[in-house]
Length: 154
Image (cartoon, rainbow, N blue to C red):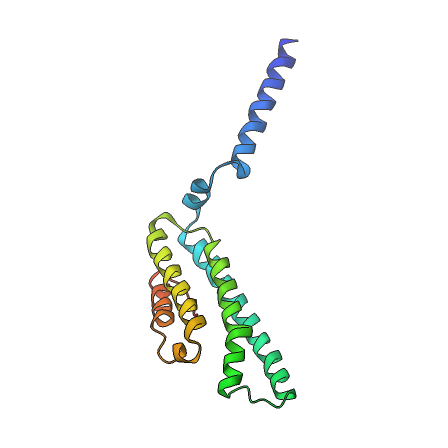
């Protein structure tokens, strides 16, 4: 009988240990365990996916604009591209980047990078075409991304 009780106690202890090791921990544990290589791989995948999606959305929108008799490269066409494709895509990319676990030693740089990206998106929303001419924030985002080893462009 004692063996059965000890067996159940051991099984419960092992189950509890496995539960803690399989997602039972807090965010700090997950963040602490991510390596820079994992971070770069995850982040670059987010950026690449959003870039491809943005290109496909551009192609579809350009066809639509042309079928409506508008030039995609005109001021009106570019504003439509910004409001319908670029800004929503950048906002989606920002949300996905914010969800990626960051190595502890890169947290400050990545937080600054994402804040810069957010400011660039806000400026683009407010100023539209004017923001495209030398957008300091979006250029700075690309530079900051490089400093943490990313190939992520706005």
